[in-house]
Image 1 (cartoon, each protein chain N blue to C red):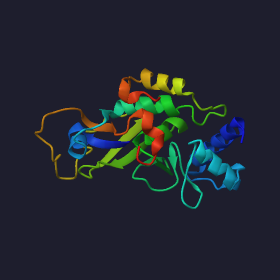
Image 2: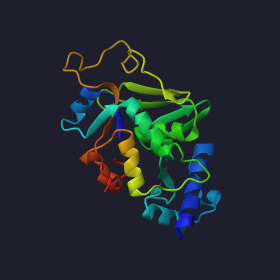
Image 3: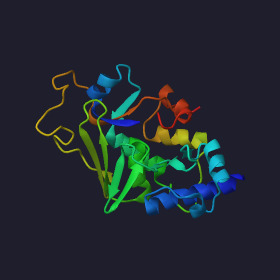
Length: 67
Length: 161
């Protein structure tokens, strides 16, 4: 996924975009998803756990369904 | 390979990337080339044609258009999400550098104290210019993240996602 200057710039490249949201929300997603990646006890999440991460940062709806 | 062995190798690969800002050779994480192929099969890494690690999210082995810098250390990330993921995982203050796919303007995100800093006015503008879309109907002002691929298909092609 990529960063654009604004949603207008997204639509210039993708007239039918996927999901667009602010960088601040992307940071919340990054922290929730990767915050423990270097923990000595890190383990992969289940699909259900990953879905809850997306839900927790406000990424809900059909686009964000993992399975 | 057991699931526990997979997890052990993944942990070692992430730690190596974080510490050395490059992909490990198999022996550097106690793995064999066959181990790496198995990790790719379970979507834990993406290998290049030579069989070495190209991606181990959030880390990338080489230039991708997403650079993460924290002090003297520079990593490459798989995507914008992973760029911030590297800073989240390492707990470092730093910056993410990317380029707008539409207008090629540089985009920089900065993290300090666990917070994403507000974009400065004009930060994402080309020097001396304005957005080519100035005056267009307003939607989300940037920088913004764009996911083209729905979540259910993320593992179809990580490089495209």
